[in-house]
Amino acid sequence: MIIRDKPGILQLLFSVRGSVLPKILPRVMLVTSFTAALVWFDHEILALPHTNAAPFAVFGIALSLFLGFRNNAAHDRWWEGRKLWGQLIADMRSLAREADIFLPDREDHHRLLRLAIGFAHAHRMNLRQLPPNAAPVKWLSKQDLAQPHPPCAMLNQMGLLVANAAPDGFAKRALAQRLASISIAQCGCERIATTPLPYVYSLLIFRTTYLYCGLIPFGLIETAGWLSPVFVAIMAYIFIGLAEVTEELAHPFGETVNGLPLDAMCRIIEISMAPHLNMDSPAPLRADRFYLS
Image (cartoon, rainbow, N blue to C red; front, side, top):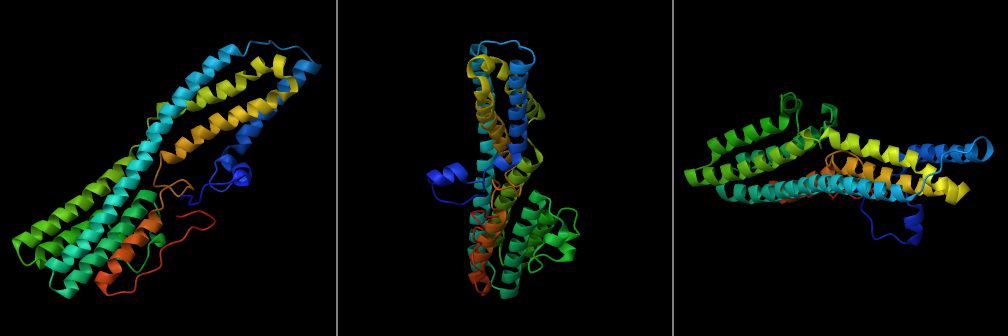
């Protein structure tokens, strides 16, 4: 995720980090070159059919509505993912305090919290589909990662530990409810990660966008002439760029510049757990060139 203050004029004009421009530039250049070729052909070889620009205004409004709907749906997924990870961090902090209260044995207490941190990292890796060699060895062992579903395996171990170590029924109930809340947040994240936006939305948006950018030069050639490629480039940047932004937001747990900073949030959990484990708190992750992973 990009972390930076409100950009100034120069940053608005020239900032590339966090922008979708590097991804869409080849497509924008292709559409612009196509328009320039049409203008040249119309002026030098054979006059092409010229249409009024009014129908394209209606076409553009319809395309804007499609893009707006998809953008809202994608942003809802992104924001829900952030809320679920916020809930997970809150549950982890509450679990640490409840473990202080209900688990008198320090070994069981520390093991539960270490398993909780391991679960957070396993959950992050599962959402991002990272390979086992990307696991932090301090919190996850090869045996943990060898399980069919490492996050659930960690939660199962936590449940067994609570069942065996909690001194009474009230303590077991309180800790079990906390683990259930963690599981609910986990399932919500997995629902987002495994259920993409319907493919028909993407198909309709991208087809309509390229159709619009390919046809609008015929409505601009007569009035705009050699400025047509400039106007088409601007429109292509707007529509193709917005479509690409929604594509990134629709996958909030990815490692794109607009994805959620799962590494930083796992570090927040480590920082919150450290005092309960009698450990020095690690330093929070900082943005690297405005990017926080």
